[in-house]
Length: 566
Image (tube, rainbow, N blue to C red; front, side, top):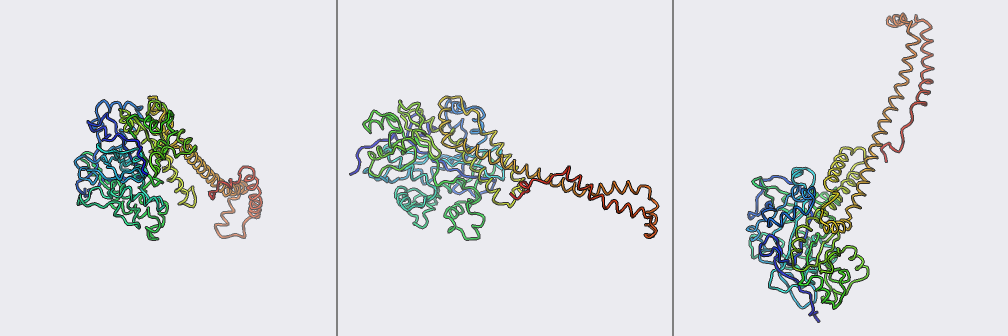
């Protein structure tokens, strides 16, 4: 029988840019898709007149909220997040033409007696890090596509619905097992693959995709939004990815069967043009479940006085982005193991747990269970900005590791890649100076949250490992270069010493025999004095002896370990 007991979410528009929603606090799920971009100015054909345009933070938010957002971080952190990065979004009048403008029916995938609920998407947003300094760089830069989903008012949406939405919407690649595709297709059957179709009433949806094309149903929802050009002021629009990126990405993500053999050569393990940079099949999830009484609502649902978040099944599943139990909320609440509890405890920020405001962080999700209040706005803005920076650090570190590995694989001898390695090392040094902050913020809760999130993003571990790899590689190349110089000095010494000794002996023994050269110049070889032949014999005999003695005493053989052959 369907489970009639449930945990109801606060629904509505959580967007802080909306005057009616600013401090109300509503549930939402944000999905963050990282990608590599190379900004090129193009006279592109802007389909349906749709483009991303720059966000003016001070204009979009209330002045008080904007000032609070800026002052929350140290100046160097704020500069990296707000000044050096470009924030763009699709304007309201353009987004109203999209297939999402009136909401999408999302099918429930658990047995709670309801068939569907309505989901709306806020205007897609891009955050392009290092824009001002590297927008024209030939190297790949890192950007994030951000999609916010929320539930319009006037409907009943429960916490298990939110778990279901998070589990399936975040996937941008087929995980590889049929059961996931079956449930994915069931839950997201009405989700559009095109955002701006020619006919708004007829657009391709997930349910229209054949089983053989299931990769398209996962990926195209993301890649199509990356092909939309970016307008900055009155400049020529920028294209961030190739025009046919969706097709290339789809062919690559299918694997070798999607490419002919010639196309796969040199591409195995590398995404098309390196724009797909995240080695996962899931986007990052940033989600707030807003309940009337916050975490206390879970207490009442479970009839317990327990107030520690990690004791509740819904919290553990929300934090780990797991789907709900198919038998309903009651089973979701209690179906957790001791291992899961321990895992969740380490990743839960507990300062306000007694108040019913719970926060948790890991490398694939940041979540909160909150009461409707301004804390929802802070979670959507300030806290998210902090986590987005950490996500950027994690991906950049993976990028450095991949570059270093690729550098070692593509060449036979590492010392032949000094120029490429020097470039990589310079970028890593710049990255260290700009992004390894001694202090992110002076706010106590920010420091505490940041420490938990940074630990479970593995940023420090990755940084130390990659720094060690780069330092070791640098030391190796330095030893190879020193060894090459030593080898050259030995070669010069081995050739030069005999010549020097021979010249010295010739000079000493023949300095008074200038008349001999007159006879040689006239061709009278047999009239040469015997002392000339004596001098020649002495030089021939003594040169090897003296040369050997000098080489043995002053020249050492080069270290064989540094001969460049590994």
